[in-house]
Length: 364
Image (cartoon, rainbow, N blue to C red):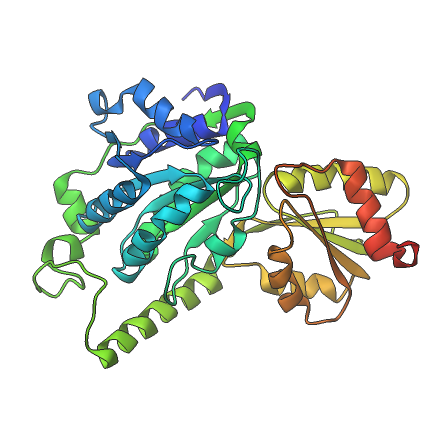
């Protein structure tokens, strides 16, 4: 079969991949810099070809509750938004997690706090990886660095979400959402029939745990011992995800004396900085977390035993660095370099930070 190769934005790739996955529905609301997801779906009109429902809800709160209802029916449903819009969805996301339902959420991050700016950011790391809403729960969080990964992570996010019956999030910065690159689109999959939904998601037909109970989907449990039992079950699921689903990429780490840790588009900037550093004889490696949760803790811990220091580069004031420091446990210096408010560093700035923060801190 001939590959379907297109030139498109990351946001557009999300929309095309959702249609080709056979998603049942998308419920969303416009907000920059992710509005092209909804706009592309409206342009493609998949309700006429695959039967996919596409609806612009009256608000972000309405959209996430529509996702909640669709997920409770065993459907492959998704939403997308950007930072302040995702904040509005947090209560619904927590309900979906507590109800043990699959759903895909896309967050194309913009600068904050508050309404902030429409320029790129990575300042929603805490919100995504630490649950965001109330209660002890996790999302599976995928961080794309290319337009191709924006497309690929739609299927991966849905598949992981259904496998573990927990929401998954594609956490993209605004650079990846808005940049245009070549992308190979996946082949069209057929939407599941009602019989296939019932077979894959018996809980959607016979009750929450497939034991013939009335199918009342709720996150409410007034009996404290039962609520603790629910939480213990959630934690067992999260432990299994943490054991089996960690994803990352390493670049030039085999002989690295120094390590940079970065995700999303910033990892691409850092990779160029590393190439420049190696041209000067400085042995630097890069670890790019692909799953921000579960986090590649063991891999960073292992590298920290071989390098002299670690620089964490982010488009925020320092969030992922907390997880890196937990992994390193003080074995080597861990320092942060970040830009905020929509400002994007260049490779030279990353190299300067590596020099002054890690290699020659006496220069500061």
